[in-house]
Length: 426
Ligand code: MEV
Image 1 (cartoon, rainbow, N blue to C red):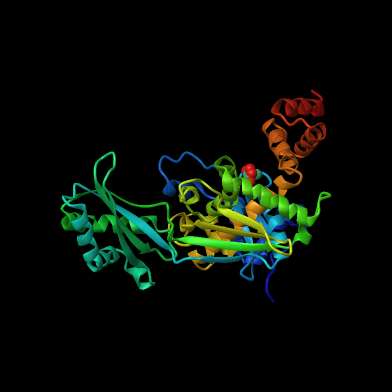
Image 2 (spheres, rainbow, N blue to C red):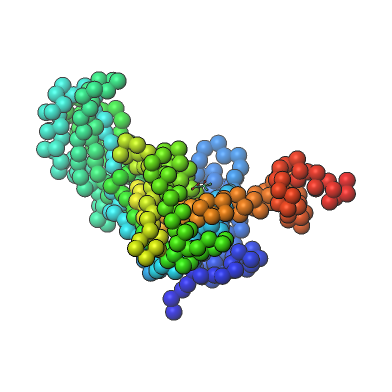
């Protein structure tokens, strides 16, 4: 029987019960299940970065209801912000009513940049590089026989000429490199460093930078969805009207970078959370996403929304997603391994498709809230809990203090402390 990610009332279950359900769903071993509560150990952290003095854990939540390309997924998300996981689960439920997300991704092609200064003749140098394509590929591939044996390695070569820069004329060589299931930063950086001496020889120039580009626009992912207008009805507003308002909300992002930045921030709420949970480099994704959003010369939204003839809502997202399922923290961080197992992903391409769907779903969640009751109402309850905890509330007092603040409409550290003092009778 196919597994379903539909778990009505998941959020109401006690934490232990939620862990049990996810562990059973993903077939986690008792050790893996235990890791969900324990996370990273100091000894592992010490091997990951320098000067370690402690750990900085984030809440790990599970977004439910996801159907992507006909397959059900539970989505692990590491994030500190309230409402993101709940909003996404709700959006995924609505999208499910229209058949789920349809997602695709390109081959995992990264770009390595090799910067050449002082080439005596840019045109000639560019020609020489292109003529030596096979030799450059052979050299670049020599360091990564495993990736090459899996079908990866050098796939393309481009030379870009900059006649006028603040440092004078320069060339930049783009080596297009398929990194298979790795995010591939190390792989392409090594490839770039390996071919640099040959590039110098060919051009008579001097190589400076040898580094990947985070604008990984050859490694794209797409997701689309249709939300039937009927399921959008709520809060006294008809479904068709909600769909219309969502399109109107998106249209502002399409013309205004001030709104587009916030629109895309909401998308990245979901994308980063999955990237962190799976041990991927979320700063690389941020850099790529925002640069891609500005590729036309003006910054725009990463999604599009429109209403079709039936009045249903159609959404689409396209962005670079350089993510991996092997290498880096995906393997070193024990919890990242467990999260990948919960996702049940086999390849980096599949992970990119999931993450694109998460971005689109997260955007739907935000636009739905913004176009109807506003973002604050849902936010406030959880936010109030955080403020109550920051003021020193523990156990049952957290909910009591939070509820009082929500009822009163004043959520502040000062008010939380006052209520706490009152409740404690001091
Ligand atoms: C908050 O973290 C994200 C939103 O601002 C996104 C948006 O406005 O679309 C709600």
